[in-house]
Image (cartoon, rainbow, N blue to C red):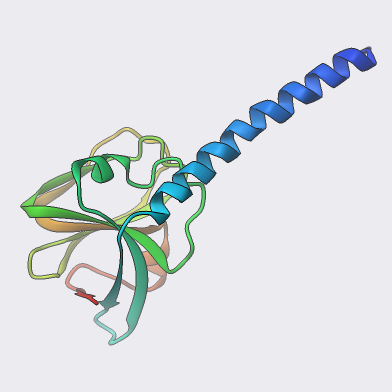
Length: 160
């Protein structure tokens, strides 16, 4: 198969593709830039095997930040995450709208105990993921990491 295209048409097509692709980069850069202005916290998870895992997390502690979450972020360092903090314990419901990366959702009660883990939440999925029980925090980390690190319900979170 042969496609005939003039140099002018080819230049227009390349310019269009260059401009179109820059929008995605700008959105990702803007999302990361905004996150950098958020409060950060260091947390540690201790699992039942006696191992400790430290994460540097962005804190979503307002309605705006809880709605925004990790939307439009295209990658997350292995030891990073997002901690959704609620004023009082509640049944939390999460979704993956405009979230481009797979995440593990760790639901944490007021005693800083993980009570539920939703592994590998699918990017861009609009289905609700519920804690089913009241939680004070929800921690999002890279998808598959909870299983890899053998983090389970019953494990504890420590805040620094």
